[in-house]
Length: 371
Ligand SMILES: *Cc1c(COP(=O)(O)O)cnc(C)c1O
Image (cartoon, rainbow, N blue to C red; front, side, top):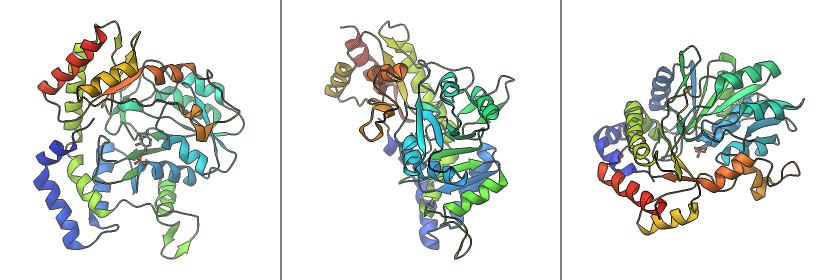
């Protein structure tokens, strides 16, 4: 699905040198590489504080801890996302409230959020799915009206711009109270292991977040709050520092592949290409088609026979996952999400796709769709 090897080979010398510096210095935990990457990312995002941590899942969990959410508090999020979004809500004893999506962008539907609000609601977690920002102005308005926190899950959308109605822009993850991202290798800004980060403009929250990722410690061996061990290791920071310089170029490459796919598929009656949203740029973490009157699983099988990777993100909505079954939901309750789970297919997407690969993939998809 993603070509990490060729991406690495293009920046091998820089990355290898950066990693070697960490090893030579032996500053493996919270070394200068971490601080330096943190500052670079703050500048890139235009955000006051970046708090590096161990992975995107922890970024979400630590955010909820820092906001002081307590068991019984309800957190509203989308049912059409990676499990981590809801998992951390459940792990903290909070109640995930899963709502439906917009059928074209797959992002959480602000009207569905508004309907789900109760006196126990404390926070909303919008997910910028597949690399395109969700409707943040509408969601910020709802949050203000009901006094709720917003934690943006920007794990798939680092580098995307949210475009306000007045045309001003902010980076994904820097609009709500807190933003979270992941540096998992296949993410748009991926390291060579696990990694993540939390963003905020709030000085006090930043203090809490920084303490929580480091055992709840502001002064060494004095613990004023319950924390966890969730740090970005220095070697990963060294890789990320190099790759961050290329993040915008990577988005251009991904958009180039997406345009090729769009040109090939947009006229086809059985394939719906990804909707582009006026309010956001798209960084194409995934290129996801909606199949119409087409056997989606047959297409998956057909592509597999031709050695073309493809995947379904996500085959089972969270409200129908065994671990999350609740009397609150039954099949049919979130029809748009359930429909998407049956019809979506994601094609290979990376910074390294050449015309030959794109031609091979598109002709295979069209061959199946024309049968
Ligand atoms: C990848 C991802 C996460 C979790 O990130 P990890 O670094 O793998 O823990 C959370 N939410 C979404 C939407 C993701 O895509």
